[in-house]
Image (tube, rainbow, N blue to C red; front, side, top):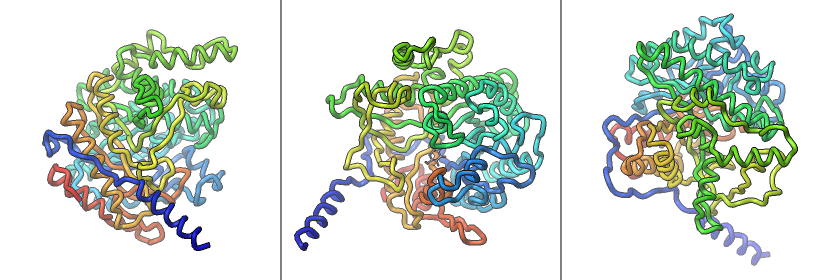
Length: 497
Ligand code: NOJ
């Protein structure tokens, strides 16, 4: 019995010892960020606003989903009240000022502004709320960076297919023009969509997120296709009608990990395949040379579709018209980077047929040395951020990059030393990339405050500020990481913790 205990303890300590501290070295060059480098913090409407049915707001698919499927959320919670930011923006503003951020990245709730998704009903109370936020941010020298869509699709649109119906291109185009007209005199940084791969593959492929469609390798691809076209339509409208008077920038936020190959001795072609199947899927049509999906993906999916006896590919290339509209439709690439993986070639028989897993023929693993956050998918790999920024520099003509999200999950403790390490290491990755010629100009941390983490509810906390959900005043309390981040912003240097 004793021997067993000793063995168990040793195994525990040994496996602990195998985990490395989350850190990254300075690789030479400047120790300071460029003088015009911008630091920010990010949130999204459904995750913080609450007020789900107040003041004329319409329903989003996340309202409906959490109400009809409470068992699907780890702690059976929802965003009905969340951080109550709809009523407590002043408290968020105090937190932003304490951080001394240059910008605040937040999202508009489409159904709060247009409850029917189209412009037949315009909700003035929603406009008033966002006007108040924007004006107060600007009065405090904090630039608003607005995401137009962050998961909360109007239910009204979902009723007839959501992202799988290409009429969404028209709806989104009208919504975008309404936003430029209403807020574009003051908002100069627009992000059309946040993480299309995630809401498409998880929402229309794997049925893990609303609208719970299980149609892998088909509906998820349609969703990404319509997203790209809706994005480009909104971008072109801005350039044609608003840019000359408003002078802002429009981009899109794409999530991606970086990939390393291990088993085949660092085979570059496997790294390339993994990168094209993640970042490249959405980035290549916009920022690449062809105005289309990566050729590797088009070929794979055409071949697989023929093998499946289909009459056309599950991922048809964009025609000449759309290719022209999409190519170059981004003033910056928004990047959400959290973690990395090893990628190896998988057995061709692996994966549900059809599916993204089957088409990509890759399998992924992690390094036991990588430190893990509270989220099962989150490992600290700061080198991956440096490498993905270099990959973007080399593949997309050094396009301007905004790191729009990067963050660490834990239990919400105030002494969040692991988040401090993560933040420090990832800021070092950004600085190393800048020193290596990457055109990265903005970094934003996810998240300003603890919030609703989708299917994980409130069980995983990403905030720089702690939020006591049960306290009547929902105070935002600075964690150690908030103090650390503000010292970096103030000095423009990475302070060693
Ligand atoms: C990315 C998403 O944009 C955000 O909504 C989410 O909370 C974070 N990742 C953490 O998972």
